[in-house]
Image 1: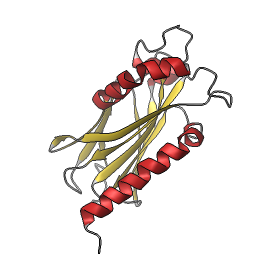
Image 2: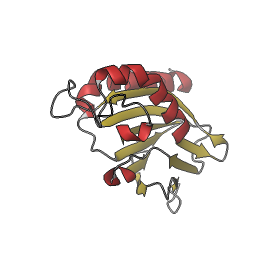
Image 3: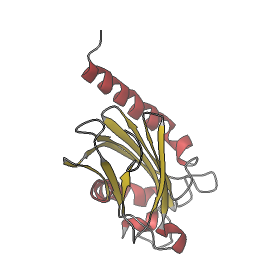
Image 4: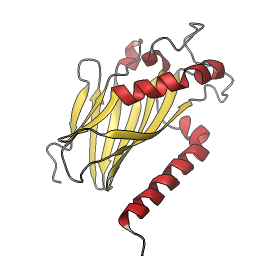
Length: 180
């Protein structure tokens, strides 16, 4: 029999590997300014579609998009900003975001074109199950349409919580009025 920690490790590894293999096909299927947080056992799996303009000075040539060269040059900075500005918090504090994967979204069917959106994925390690959680995001773009993001959170595949975040409302308690 596989121990629970081994099972979680295997599930997490398979999840991350499958995401990395399907990233290019998944990246164009996530609607801009949307995201998901799926809470399963001791992990919360996050996928967000975020505008390039939310990441400051990564668009070196100021064309409004992110080329492959710009992406390669600034990938570490993007990951660092996601770690700091996409935060899941419990009563134990900020939860660790692991295995961050970032991809440019295909524009008009080609990654040769500059991307205006990025897909960001990662897994938060939860310190305890069934504890109250809040999600905060401080990555909003410069255009009006990029000033909000709709996120669908699910818990154990049964509970569903849809909410919007914007620069005025950057934090949302998850499943506050729902049974645990």
